[in-house]
Figure 1 (cartoon, rainbow, N blue to C red):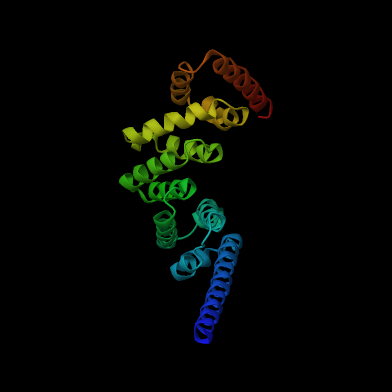
Figure 2: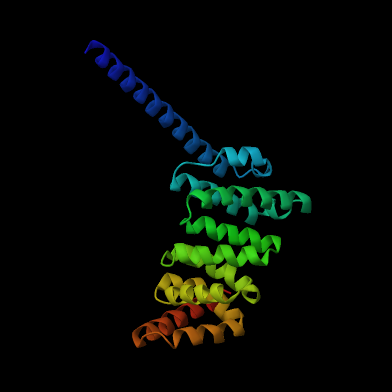
Length: 228
């Protein structure tokens, strides 16, 4: 009996030690993901080992890392990098994002970011593949739909059928809210081809949504022209 009790105590102690170790390990990974994403220094993103070592064990931690890549790639500092450094930055972010989507396949934000990186690298197949996965994993997340809208319109001529269908669903989502309409106003004003495209989407919507879209759009167009 004493032997059995001793074994149980050892096993309980080992379990406690492993739990404590994992908690410290997870907390450290979480801290590193936040730290990397908030420094916004190109050196952190050009060092693939440092970037991959920051991969988190939580969705919120992953989001910090995706934020970091998006901020770095769209910042002035990231855009004025020499071409070879810019490509390294894109490649390292893509490698990290691939790891995230591997164990978190429904992370629509990471899939969006993979589509963004593929677009920047001229990877047509990767662009469509990642964009479609973002549509499928986050069809009703408006803040991601706003990001996808801009990317899909920028690369509209590159969209394959599945990606075009997802883009139309995003547009249908955006026209149903004031915030969503504000997202599309600038492109609606400046690009006649998009205007025609948008009208085709809205005319299939219920009458009340059509009326609200027109009302909000007129107000936003007026506000935009007054601020010019």
